[in-house]
Length: 278
Image 1 (cartoon, rainbow, N blue to C red):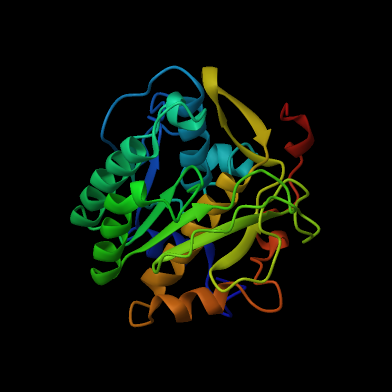
Image 2: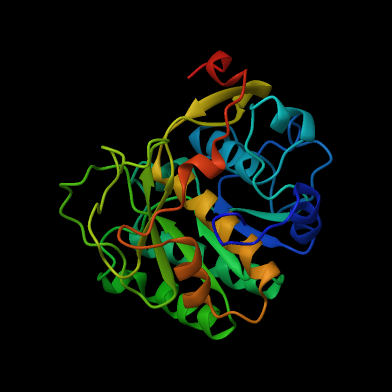
């Protein structure tokens, strides 16, 4: 809100977040984690063991979490008070490239339509969309176009492949691709698409604190975490400025020349930050 020029108190932000609804298409988060207890999280399925479940647990804690964990710097809880819809559609086979594009597209398309029907207008995927020009993505492309017509935006990570990666970011209308920057504001070395492209923005994705598997806490880095934080910031601004169109909201938060969300705003100093294991 400060970066958008909106002078509000933390209590006002929490009150605004009460009407925020964000859909996370990921694995199934561990809702028994102490940092997530009592938060408004609607799960489509229970947590599953493996990378996808741990990833989802971490991502959810970037958006919501207990006040105590947030004060101690163990989680970010950017949208404290919001409702998170956790669609457990991503599994380890998808994350490791063992699932076909067509199967992944169909699963994401179904979840995306369900998210929009549930009232979510900000939807974030946990993994990048590779080979976006492949015809096997058709079901998801159609779903994204439909979601856009309903007033929704889809946020996806750029990928953790480095700036020299040859893949072109997904150019579909309604898709916002998010790369990573560090606390200093520089683009992360692991972040793909470090170029000025119309649908690419940058958000903090290095050493982000969040909930870990086994009810612990950890620091993690990756463009998927940058995408989650970008989605959370956009949703907070959307509920504050409901009359603004998505292009205006994006332009407000992600400013030229590199369209970065200010990392210093999201990472205030905390005494426990260095004590959380990486």
